[in-house]
Image (tube, rainbow, N blue to C red):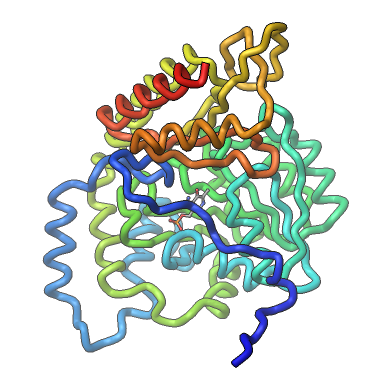
Amino acid sequence: MERYPKRDDLQELSGYHSPQVSVEVRLNTNESPISPPREFVEAVASAVRDVQWNRYPDRTATALREDIAALHGVSADNVFVANGSNEVLQSLLLAYSGAGRKVVTFEPTYQLHSHIARIAGATVVSGRRNPDFTLDAAEVARICRQHSPSVTFLCSPNNPTGLAESQESIHAAVDETPGIVLVDEAYAQFSPHTALGLVREDARVAVSRTYSKTWSMAAARLGYLIAPKWMVADLEVVALPYRVDALKQAAGRAALRFVSHMEHAVRDVVAQRERLVAAMTKMPLTVWPSQANFILFRPNIPTANPASAASGSSTSGSSTSGGGAGRALWQALLDQSVLVRDCSSWDGLTDCLRVTVGTPAENDRFLAALQTALLARD
Ligand code: PMP
């Protein structure tokens, strides 16, 4: 039997690649290193007993949406929930992009934005960041004016580069695009500002959030969108019915009872992040500043004639180049059972790796492995 070919426009596309290998220290997917509180686990355990397993869940997930709405001071009709924010983004792209429509991203950014847009059949147009990975409002305005995209993605703080987008860039997108502006705030709790204030009935702005990071609930797969009511109604047309199961609805509600635990965890992660940055900037690395729970970095290549090509806070006396130094460092860390994200083949990220902030013990292991790998290289 001959295989049946997939859609022509998917031939070049490969799936999502983030190796899941068995290691002692896993710092590659930006989860929270901190477990949710014991009371949360108990609340979920008791919810398991209360689930009516023979029945479909509440299709509108009303109680969960009301709780999320209360957290953000909006109405439940402004909240769309799905299986992780990836599914939120997929629903948004199914509703507003598709064949003959354009989607704008500013690379390098979260890879799934362009990936899901292509699967939805849209044409992806990429604007560029500055060499230090900041984004100019003028570039945002230029791309939006030139291409009139149906959906414009901004990621704030931006994964994998680390900084929140400037409010000027977000306003530029809002002012210049005729379409939807989606601000992906997966790492919002680390950010100095949010675009939630821009969500209004008479604007085309939506903000996506996730339970996977700061809420310590990556295992549950739950995300949501705060958007104008008409947009939530549009998304409900394309999304699958009963997609958010009863247990997930209960878990999502239970988590919101532990806001102060989550905020505490954020402070701990930020303290650990600063410790990592301080240690890493003493090594022959280029380290980009972060307002999230991960750090982008790149090994410097020692040269006889120092000429800094670095755009982050680099140690001096080195330049950076391709040649697989990033990939080699990733492998050297893996050989010591420390897994970080290899971004070295991504557009604009030659030799770059991304480490998620872990527990103090995991961070110790990472720093020691990094030191060993860099020494062995010299
Ligand atoms: N947006 C960004 C910027 C992310 O980094 C991630 C996860 N890596 C997601 C969305 C997806 O998160 P989830 O589907 O787990 O909610």
